Image 1 (cartoon, helix red, strand yellow):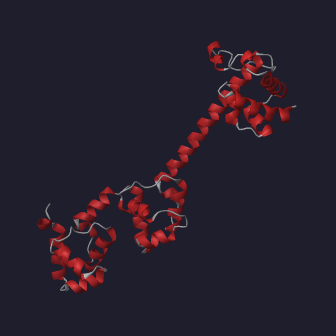
Image 2 (cartoon, helix red, strand yellow):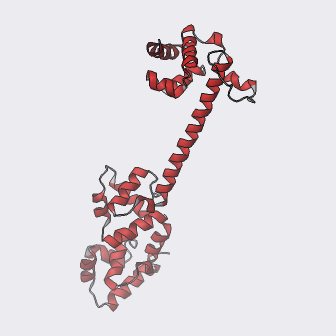
Image 3 (cartoon, one colour):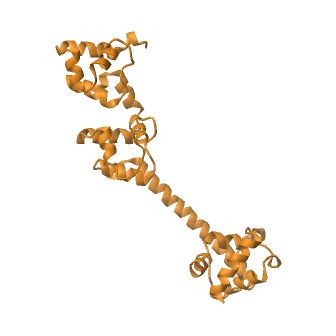
Length: 261
């Protein structure tokens, strides 16, 4: 639609006339400059697409801002959580700038404004969502992204725990098969080829073979060993599975043996 055909300009002109207002008084009532209003009404600039400006235009006439096509478009493009945020801001009479001032964490003003405009999706970071909710006296759980982020985190933690448990059982099987540990053999039906992920005993250093021996005698898994020695689980797994460099393996082995011997 060309500027001359803009329905919102026509509507605004009609409302100002019906209210028997001057352009100057309408500008003062809505907080825009008379020059800017004149440019809008004379099609010199496009009709505003800033939510608060459109709402102030509508408020003067007691009309629904959705009567302005631009406002209806803004609304339809907003994510559900952003709409909830705007509704609460309106209920509390909190402007964009006032909302930003309420945030206690350091974050870019343009970034927040882009979220409010719908130019960016509602954030998924649970810390930021909690801050946004606090700023407008809401519970973070009222935003679906918060629940989704918590679920994703729990799901991730569950997957990591399953992987950790599986690797521990593989290591226990290796220690049992090679005579470093006693007891039942985990994964009785495990295909023998699965154990090929471990280096041959001859490929471990004599010092690390001593580590394996101590793990078997003390019935230690990777988590136990990490807590005892201060070596990260990641580094321990890397050495156990032959993924560490010789230098890394030597450093890890020395740190372990200072505690276990």
